[in-house]
Amino acid sequence: MDKIALITDSASDLNTNFVIENNIKIVPFKIIFSDKEYIDGIDITPKALYEYLPKEIPKTSLPGVDDFTFALEQVKNEGYTHAIIITISSGLSGAYNSARLASENVPEVKTFVFDSMTLTMSEGAMVIETLNLIKQEKSFDEIVITLPSFRDKIDVFFTIDTLEYLIKGGRVGKVAGTIAGVLNLKPIITVGDDGIYHTVCKIRGIKQCISKLTNILTNYLENHKCKVWVLDGNAPEKSKMLYDSIKDIPNLIECTLGGSIGPALGVHTGPGLVGFIVERLD
Image (cartoon, rainbow, N blue to C red; front, side, top):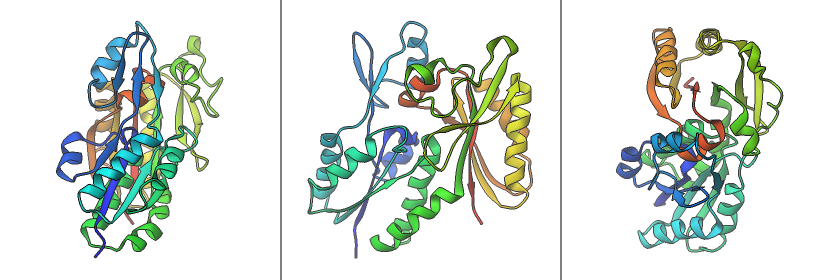
């Protein structure tokens, strides 16, 4: 029987205890300040990152070929025969290419690299679903065939206070020019099928943003049973507002508050992000 390892990058924003309990290998991004380099999720927390941001907006460094190779060597030494690597969208990072090249360095482990075409808990949800398939003892080939279907079932929507961080990080996608600060206009952003950011609409004020996000989710729940993660980018009060607005909508099977945006992504979105991940279950 296939012994399948699961590897992802730290942009998946998975809960640390969940990762440890299920022996998921996390290949971290790096957060680079002018005087120090941090390893995402290891020696810098989201709270610390947001405290640093007013002083300096750091750069991020994607996981390299050597980093993914090290993870594959680890799972080989643990007796795994196969590995599935799920990465952040190739439209937002070069991590997918690093993982693909690394897979050639450890031929003893049959590896499939999957481009999630998304990020944060959208990517994390795909890891969770893949783990469930492994636990069900599905074969490597069965899982590889199933993976692309996850992209059609999982979406992300969020709003941010300012585009400053996306612009400085070069991650603005097709969102440029959508905020008018004087008018307090904020974009509702999603990740498109092309794996980059797109503006859904522009809304004035946070209460209206929460209402619009609720309406977007309601459209999903009218036709599908869904699982939802509420995203919190150093905006706990806003996240609680969204949670309270959606938690009792019919067909919402599970709603998790506290999907913290990790440091690697927080660098590019800045403080004040609120939104949700939605996974259709039927």
